[in-house]
Amino acid sequence: MDILESYRARSVPKEMAFSEVEYRGRLARVRRGMDAQGLDLLLLHHLPSVCYLTGYQTPVSDWYNCLIVAPNGPLTLQVCDLEVGLALVHTTVERILSVGWNRMDEAAVQLLDLLREVCVDRRRIGIEPRRTGLNAHTYQLLRDTFPKADLVDASDLVPRVRAVKSPAELECLRQAGRFSVAAMEAAVRAMRPGVTENGIAAAAVAAMIEAGSEFFCTDPWVRAGHRSGIIHATYKRHFVKLGDPVIIELGGVYQRYTAPLYATAVIGRPSDRLRRLADVALATLALLYENVRAGRTAHEVARAAAKGLAGVDPEVYLSEYHAYPVGLGFPPEWSEDSIWIVEGSEESSSPARPSTECGRSGSRGSWPPASARRSP
Image (cartoon, rainbow, N blue to C red):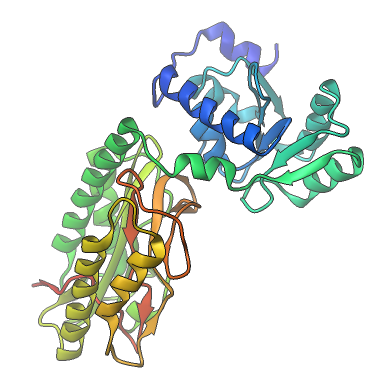
């Protein structure tokens, strides 16, 4: 008995994140996108794309998976053998094929056999070359085996459908936000001179998990003192001292939807320079909130928000973007690939396009705080 038959013999209960109606609507919108691009077939190797259309999820986000989407008819899902149970639990896909997790290269050969069944030569096949999931080995085999097929870059097809969230998705983000708030409050309570960055991160992690969060897209980012100015540095047994700024960035997860939360605290009283940077950050956030509304382009919002940064200390590094999209995600990131609030982008804002504000800036030893919150 193979692993799929073994699971089906046990009648494993479903754990669907959304209703079948929700998933059917998503698939219909993606198929309309396929029709607009003249695609005869769509191969989705990017795990968030697969999860969006089926519900399939796994913590092992770098293992092989592929969802084969035709213009009509049932879906086909390829996964590694150890993930078959998760495919059965989280999806209603009937045709699930697997390969040994220790022989993942064989998945590409299996995919070629599946494509031969539908005669893809001279067809337009959408793939996701600009997303994680499709490796060079599989891509090269596709090109070599079907030289007359037209492999079309469809990397943006599913992300554009995902960009506008349904009411059910927005509720997932709200629940994830509650987990994030619980974690941030626990992290601030843990701050005191002599605690390690690890101690602060541990408090946040415990609070998020106890509140109900699933496995994270990324661990909490916690850094203090001179390390607070090193982008993406995180907890590493460093002790926090009086006067240190502490950066915290974290995200609780509900049904794979992450609601990131970012804050800066100070152990004791903030310096005048940190206070000035905090004032600039808060003023810029206020402008961003004021200008993000339906119908405005990302460029217009970015230009308006940038006014808050006028006159900032020239030693401060300022990134080009003010916010990025969030929603459904897997390790190691929670951002989506749709609309970014950046100058030059003509994408339009929508009330159902969630994003997280990003102060990607740094100076000698400190970042501009998102708040000037004091800890004892």
